[in-house]
Each structure stands twice: as structure tokens, then as C-alpha cells.
Length: 253
Image (cartoon, rainbow, N blue to C red; front, side):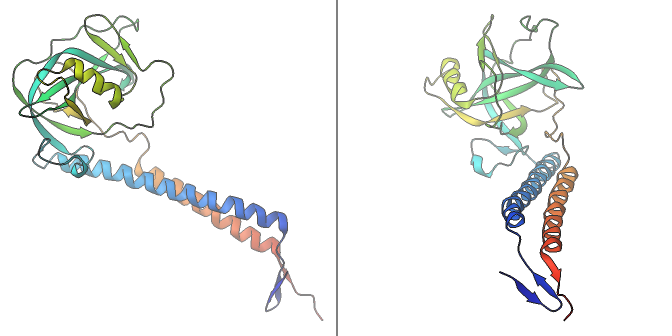
């Protein structure tokens, strides 16, 4: 098969055509994926910036599907004094450590929510867990930011390890496991339901841990946009090369 246009003839090459059919959708999908990642990162940064100026919304009143990542939220209730969760492999200013989380029973509700109280450095020996101050006691109102943990993170080995002094070491926040722990920690309702969100406690909270919250943007939106353009340019280059190799000038009569 060949197509004539002006002084040129397009003769598709079988191998090259198959390569284009396979590679072009891949390159375009990679470009679109990077564009979407850039948009997600920028949305997180925008939500975090806006949260610094807006009044927090009540967690129990506002539906979760209407709460954006890093939006300012507020909740009233009481901490369960045990267990305390230590989220492993958390980095702050280049140092390894743990994020400390506690179960929080929401007032006038059968719901509970995980509160991330902040970061603490790891001791030299991993099994030698840091000494933590007791969780705040009594009814209190907490302000902070909504964080929705990714369920795509991988764990090599055991995710949950029970340690001494009612401490539990975890590698990621698995809400199915956390719900079972919430039943154990529940203050009033044995069948309390854990909300699938974490409240990152406000830096001004009077609790001696590091709370320097920033959206997880190891790669900036601009970098993602750059990658998207690169994949798109590769797709365009592939099409141009395909046309160059498959188009021939008509021989002179």
C-alpha cells in the first residue's frame, strides 16, 4: 500500500509501523501521567497554602470526600492512652526517625481518628525506641491538617510489630489494621470506626515533638511538567522519524 501526495509517496514499513503502534501510546500515556502528577502536586501545595489562611472545618460535620489533602481541620475528643503508634522510616532534615500517632475518640460520635503528633529521632539501635511523653489527657480540641495516606506504598516484611510499653511499630498506615487496633483502644464504643484520614497536629500544639509539616513534594510540579513535555517531544520525534523513513520522493519521469 502506498499513498501519493504531490511529489512524495508514503510507503509504510511493516516493522516501523509496528514500533510506532507500540511506542506511541506508551509515550503519550507517560506524558499524560507526568502531567497528572504535576497537577496533583500543585493541588496539594495550593491546598496547603490556602489552609494557612482559612478557618479549619469540623471533621465530624464535613464529609471526608469534601476535605482536600492538607486542608485545615478541627476535632474535639479524648486520646486513648494506649496504644501509641510509631511510624517508621520518617525523615526530617536528613535524620531518620518516627512519626508518633495516637487514637483520638471524637466527642459525641462513634468515630475515631488517628492524630499524628509529630516526629522524634531514632536511637542508634532500632529496637531501642525513644522515650515519649505521655499523650495529652482529658477532653481537648485539636487543630491540624488532613492527610490521606497512600495505599500504594510497599512494605517488605511485617507491617505491624508490638513492642514494650504499649508501643506499636508500623511501616505504613494500613487502615484495616488500624481499625482493629482502634477497637482495642476504644474508650467508650468497642465497635468504633476509624476514619480513613490522619490529622497532622498543629505545630502550636503543646506537645514536645517536631511538627514541620510540608506536602510530600520530593519532585516539584515544575519537574513533573518538564518530564511530561519530554515524553510528548519523544512521541512527536517518533512520528516525525516515521514519516521521514516512510516518505520517498517520486522519481522524475
